[in-house]
Amino acid sequence: MSALENRIELEKRLGELDTRFANEMRKRGFDPAQADNVALPSALAKLSAEREAIKAELEELIAQDQTGG
Image (cartoon, rainbow, N blue to C red):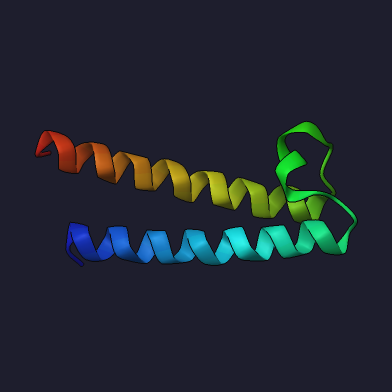
């Protein structure tokens, strides 16, 4: 998979996870904007961790693209 394809796939997965996370937050009575300020139940914490891991991977790919690496 090329770097561009990988980046597109990560962006797609991140978008899907963001939507799922926001929906799950609302379902449990939380405001998604407050995710960093509340103690999350384990299922939400797992989704949040997965989102953060994908964000970090995506940021790394973007940085590599910008430096030509």
